[in-house]
Length: 163
Image (cartoon, rainbow, N blue to C red; front, side):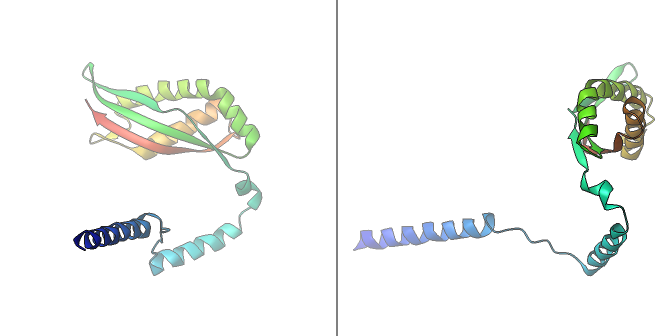
């Protein structure tokens, strides 16, 4: 009799653990939105309806390999910056151009960023100014690929590590 009670209790504990795991791990996530955010979303949605749908239907993103750049202070490396970049293009033909030209594009990025980060143009108080970096990368993309190929440079990851 004692063994049967132990087995029943063990089954109840295992069943409860399984039900708890199912409840927490397999339920879909629900986002809670405040009324301000919901109103702003509705306003943005109505503003976007007025835009040309042709430009937004065929957008593609081309992700480049991570760039790892040093920041040099007083003849030594003080920090290392890692950047993952994705390029927003209008269609698959532009995506192919970006993939074909990616070695040249990454070379231009590294040359520009290496000099910019070493001169502290992108640092303010030791912290990277992401908006300046993004502006420079947009400018370099337009110079290398042309004005009509890349519509925007998206910074996926920016990490800064002191050495």
